[in-house]
Image (cartoon, rainbow, N blue to C red; front, side, top):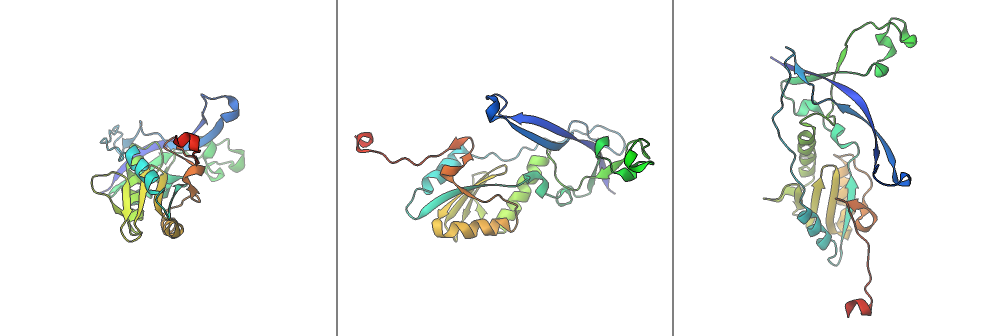
Length: 232
């Protein structure tokens, strides 16, 4: 009664900010899923239904910027660590299992007749079950969004009607905007620490930073104290 999907994973290396001078380059390495070559148990190439993740509104982000400037309020950002892999496929695949081929250099020694010499393989194209969500799968973004949403609502947040990826905490009068793996919160200064700690019980998050010490949706804030000349 199960359906089986077969694909492959492979390493990917790139230079972030490659369009900038070398001093700004940041080398990144990822293991990704080849979503363009997924077949079922009969060898048929699969086409996944296009289900994009919800959009994060720039208007929502600006709303939180304004709220954070209210007296006794503040705002902070936090990134989810290795976001996609926090979601287990078993929570979303239902009666489907995904199995993948590994790059040969990642095969364990036990898959070779000669062990650590790694010259005489026991298998031709062995596969292992993919347990966690992985970038490159056509549904990876949607599955992460669902996983993130399920964890957020456990902490007392509710999604704002008509706004994708925007949440409000009715009890604490706080607001939360989510853009893929970037979380942005505005609320009373006295409540922010506890609100983040509650989320960190369900999501692996980096330590939060204040708005003016981080970048969100490509925008960085700086505190500005106007002079009388500026006001004139």
